[in-house]
Amino acid sequence: MVIRNKQSLGEAMDRTLVLKIRTGDKRALGQLVERHKKLAYQVALGLVGNKDDAYDISQEAFLRVYRSADKFDDSQPFLPWFYTIVTNLSRTWLKRRSKRENKMVDVDDSSYLMVAEGTPESALVRKETIDRLRAALKKLSFDDREIITLQHFRGMSYDEIAELLGIPKGTVMSRLYYARKKLAESMRSYYE
Amino acid sequence: MNKRFREMIAGYVDDELTNAERTEFEQKLAANPELRAELEEFRKLKEVTSVMSYADLPLEVWENYWQSLYRKLERGFGWIFFSIGAMILLGFGAWELFHQVFTDPASPWYIKIGLPILLLGLVILVVSLGRERLFAYRKDRYKEVIR
Image 1 (cartoon, each protein chain N blue to C red):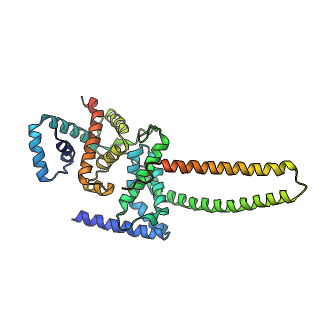
Image 2 (cartoon, rainbow over the protein chains, first blue to last red):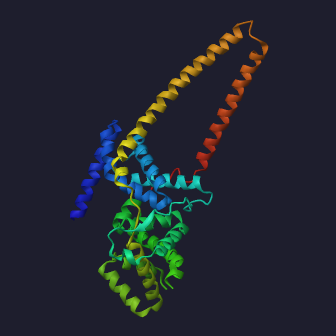
């Protein structure tokens, strides 16, 4: 209940800020940026696998919000709309970078995935594991990578993912199952 | 194996099943070694990803994030004004040039021929580029993606 209220407060704040942005208020854009810059960056990073490009995509997404604020339906929450902007920009970026549509491309940024700081298991996780996981993620389709990013690396609950993507909770579970299955298949030889 | 139970593996690993679903799933799990093997594989995967994260940016990059974005925003406006101004001036310059060349009987013939050819080439290039952009936009599978 408390989480739901917090979420509603956040949604109301986002909505107010976008309404202010419509009038050209750059300070409101600044506040919106502070609230969501890390989400935008991390989602883009999970999809394109390159830090510099993820940074640029996240910034471009906010510029789009500023230019298209009047297109935002203020009866709806802001985050799904913003999220769609970030994923569409990432898709376009991938299409431009690679003829293999929607596949993550090799952009020589092997450091985008790392062992989380302060994790007690850090020492146990070898470089090989990271390399294997990175290679496995690269093989996934755009949609599979998206759902893995949100659940595994953003730590979002199924309800949050369902709301963000505008899909039923059951579909979240189903998409996660198939994405993980492919990921697990790529990792299988490593476990053995 | 039942598709529904397979998909429930994900929910079970993430602790997202309802109590009733969990009980139902555990009953199925006890009787199905294939399901247990798949569950084990998912747990291993979750174990690996739980200690990994996407690389964060250095603190100073986050601190300068807004300033960098603001500069891009300003530059965007700058380019719009610059383009409008340039188009007005170039249009005026072209008009003046044409007017002068074609009203002045002393203008050499090659200038009188060269200028319209130059203009024609420019028009063809603009139309061709515009058509290419329009074609690319129509073929863009994701332009209408709305969740």
